[in-house]
Length: 195
Image 1: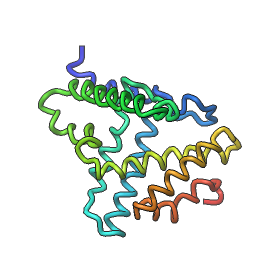
Image 2: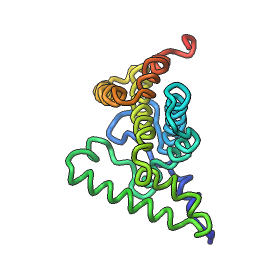
Image 3: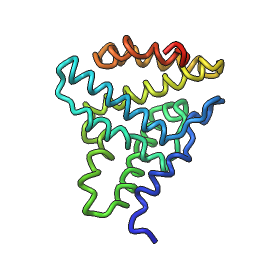
Image 4: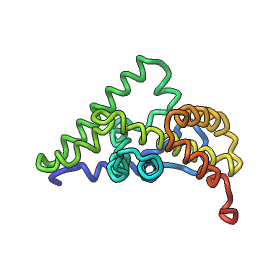
């Protein structure tokens, strides 16, 4: 038996499908989603630091983003309409996510826990900086919708509109996200020959 199942369990996030209520032309799993969120969060933090003079460490944000859905190894990916149906349900799910993080964290050898605590519990420990990851998570979902729509899958039309409204609201208070939306989001709707 292995000393710890931490990394082996994390590796299994590639088996957790996202968008469970939607007919996706391009399947997406939690592992690839986490990587994309990490790239986007790093971009937002770099824009914040380099263009808007904010005291933020893009590497710290990127590392935390890699683990932002680690709880789903135990909870699975609960579809957004279910997760946010009402306050009681979303509160219970938040508790389940924290419990899952604690369970996963406890699998690490004690001598490694200090090095992973900040990334696994980033949302709880750094709520102000977590907004970069939250914005990147919404961006990732919106990009998924754009990809599906550009492939002719109208199933994602309402989700795209809802996410765009959410992103526009977040961008009104977040210069980094506004800049990303103004300068980069259009490229996601282009074909490879147009890029």
